[in-house]
Length: 123
Image (cartoon, one colour):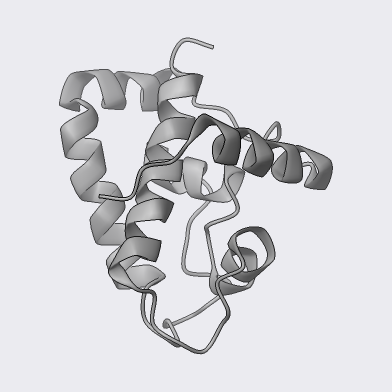
């Protein structure tokens, strides 16, 4: 599993903040309830599934529109963290478009999503 260091997380948050993304999205009460009722391990499975199906392919179906902005805590976190489509992955993570994500890159994206969710519970 790819570890996300505090230094890398803070650098990413700065980049996202400068772009206006990270502060634009919040976890509402229903999403927080969803997280607490299911637990972080289930959210990790959901995040990995969404990333592998919607972002990992070289040319994802409906790229740019594949991630809803509401309805699931992982979707909200993806938008807040700049990992909602391949253009955002390229901009914020340096993962170029047109090629499949490696297992380490997909794991990093999942870790970023979960880190944001954990920081935004009860905030």
